[in-house]
Image (cartoon, rainbow, N blue to C red; front, side, top):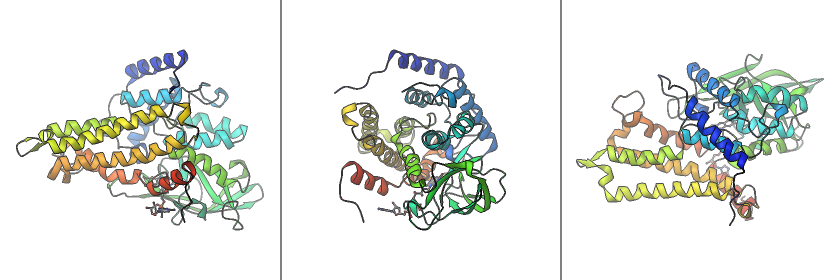
Length: 402
Ligand SMILES: Cc1cc2nc3c(=O)[nH]c(=O)nc-3n(C[C@H](O)[C@H](O)[C@H](O)COP(=O)(O)OP(=O)(O)OC[C@H]3O[C@@H](n4cnc5c(N)ncnc54)[C@H](O)[C@@H]3O)c2cc1C
C-alpha cells in the first residue's frame, strides 16, 4: 500500500524546521507552564507563549498552508511537518490553539475577503487570541439547541445569552460564536459570527475552577452586546453549516492544524517507564514487577499503534472517507492518555496523593494532574460517546442512535 512520500520541498522544509527549532528553543520559564494551552492563566505565561508563537510564525512554522495574501506561507502539506517537528522537539506549545485549529479554517472557508485579510494575520502571530463560544448550559453535545440570541437591528446585531466552558476567554480578543437568530427551525435558526469580547460593553467573562484546582475556561455572559453585521460569517441561517466546518477541524479532521509543541503522547508513555524505574515497590524499582511491566508495555503498544495510525492517514486507499482516521485519532489518543495517566498513579501508589506545590511529589505531581485533566480531554471537542456515535453513523454507516 502506498504512503504518500514527501516531496523534495517538503523534506527541505522538515530540515529547516529541525534546524530552526534546535537553534531557537526558548529558555525555560522559572514557573512551570500548564499541561495544555487552554489552561494558561498567568499573564507571564501568556506573554512568553505569545512571543514564542510569533517567532514560530515569522520563521514560517505557523500557517504554512494558508494563502500568502492572508498572511500564510502559501504552501501545501507543510503544516503537518512543522507541527510534527515542534512536537518532536518538545518546545512549548502554541497558545492560540483555538484560533489556529478552529477559527482560522472557518474564516478561510466562510469569511469575506476583508474578514480573511484583517483577522487571519494577527491570529497567526498570536497578537490576537481567539476563543470559541459554542457550548451553553443546555447545549453541549446537542449544540444545535444553542439559545444565545442575536437580534437584527439595522446594520447591527444585539446579542444576549450565556456561553460556558469557554477556554481562553480570559485572554481572548475575539470569539467565534454560534447564535440563534430565529426560533422557527432548530438548525436553520442559527447564524455564526465573530465578535470582539475584550473590553466590549455588555460582555462579562467569569473564570471557572476545574477539578485540578486550575482555571482556563470560563463562562461568558452577553448582555445587549452590539456588533456590526460585518462580523457575520456566511449567510443568516447558515450557522449550522459553518459550525460543522469548525467541528470538523476541532474533532481532528485537519491533522496538525492547531500547531505542535508541548508534552505529547511520547513524553507521557516514555515517562511511565522512567517513573517505574524510579519508584520503589517492596524495596525494588517498580519496573522489576513483571505484571506491572506488562501493563506499561500494553500502553507502549497502543502508543505505537497511534503512531502507525498517523502514517495510515497518509495512505490514500484508507482515506476515502476523510473523517475515518482523524476521528478515531481523537477518541483513541484521549482515552490512551487517560489510561497512561491512571497507570502512572498506580505506579506512584501513595505518592500519587501528593499534589502541585508539594516538593515531595514525584515528577512535580504531573501524574495526578494529568489524570484529573484527562477527563476534560475525553469531553472537550465532542465526548467519547458522541465521537463513537459519529464514527458509527457517518463512517461505518450504522443505524442512527436515538
Ligand atoms: C476542557 C474542556 C474545554 C472546553 N472548551 C470549550 C470551548 O472553548 N468552547 C466551547 O464552546 N465549549 C468548550 N467545552 C465544552 C464541550 O464542548 C462540552 O463539554 C461537550 O460538547 C459536552 O457537552 P456537555 O458538557 O453539555 O455535556 P452533555 O452534552 O450534557 O453530555 C452529558 C453526557 O451525556 C452523554 N451524551 C450526550 N448526548 C449523547 C448521545 N447522543 N449519545 C450518547 N451519549 C450522549 C455525553 O457523552 C456525556 O457523557 C470544553 C469542555 C472541556 C471539558
